[in-house]
Image (cartoon, rainbow, N blue to C red; front, side, top):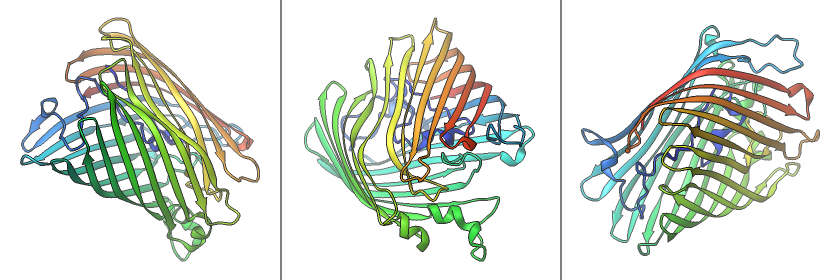
Length: 430
């Protein structure tokens, strides 16, 4: 099956995989074959019927095992590292609701629950959800987007904390269908960001307690244009252009972090069903901050999520990576540049037994840091896969035993740290 996995074990915030826009599951080509036009709803034959809802549920215990460093203690710290047993449960629901013969609603909701055997104060959960309502009118249509993300993954610049971050994206616009090969979307975007430390909530009377809020609470508004052209088979060439204005809530942060960003991308979307599936894009970003002492960014950006399939056995190689500029969560330096990627081989020897071998490397360059701080994250994964069943519609049952090693090597020596996890996993559903 042509699937790019996005397991997210505890501490996954180190690699900020969730912030990569293409980190999503690419399922079987039979299962999620794409429609030619965004004005058409997905094929209902690929969903289960639950009353008015067409659903594709999934459930996974992505990890049930042992973590050697649950508090992300640095290598040179006098504080001893603490290990603990943990479980990671990740249900998912992808759905479709049809309103008569025209309008339709699509949505995707992912939950991630993490629980520890002894260190119960570390238990947490993440939510990632989005929905789109589309109302077509022959050659054009209108759409509305809404979403909600809640995460307590550790920020990349400070793995010792776990702030609660929430995002509320909204959007609306028009879809144009110029022919059976080409279409375009143009619309308005808005997102509100908040953050807090549940262990030390913000108290306006104690300014130091509001540091995370000050660095993160903001509103972003902008516009976007996306145009696609079907070049051949399922492969599309696309162009994306976007602009956003960022305004922070706290005056101290606004003086340094407010800014404007413009992006332009070109790319290829290979669709699903061939040897190569997924998409990649490359472009340019211009990030201007209002702070006179803040370092702007003006340079190339890119992201990729591709899979090469070795036939019907399900064996494949996946590549997921990005070069992107982002806001820090808990650092006086406003921006960092992330450059990294992961390569994973899934090799099945027969219908039931396979192996997983993966490696990743990412550098994080904190723009304008007077110490020249650069962090390097290195990961490695080795696992055994036991595939019980998999249908042509993409419903599968698979067990796995994996070991993962993570190492952070920073130019600031006190930040160096490492951890290892070994665990059992099972996935069931679509």
